[in-house]
Image (cartoon, rainbow, N blue to C red):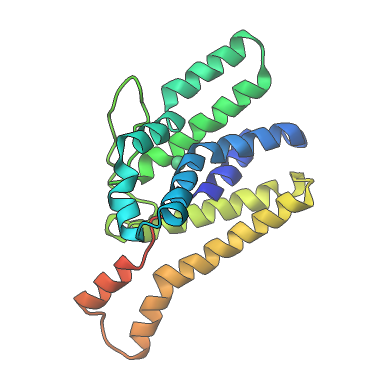
Length: 215
Ligand SMILES: [Zn+2]
């Protein structure tokens, strides 16, 4: 699932109304598992200047990167963290770990060949879902639409409770970008093809699919 969706959906499901400190912890826990991926991408793209194709087909699959991503997407490790929080009566840690668990539970059903090892280090099992949140070959168009609608509903639901102007602005921005992104990647192509009144050729499909970035 797209990183901003985790922040908004986790907030809707876990936040305790007007407790803004708890909300910040939930948002942080929602995005934390994907931060190593962003850091890796920044390093690969701007420090080593690898081509986009190589970043996602080779560099991303190096064991060190994979283990780092698996650590932050691990349900057992987050449960262990929650247990420590419970034992020491540390509510912030419990909330953070619940948000991490929820992130993994949302990722689990929508990753196909980029599936994470959600049971690391207990098991290296990857659930290869028939659905993908981005890959058009695995119902990406439908999943992306469901994600967009879920985020919109969560935003409308949470909006009155968010008392930070920056938070509200970010929520509007995310929804705007999703709407624009969806139109750009999934709709415009078909509009263009319909306009000139012909069905898209195989080559056009391939070109369009290749244009979609996994992030
Ligand atoms: Zn993730």
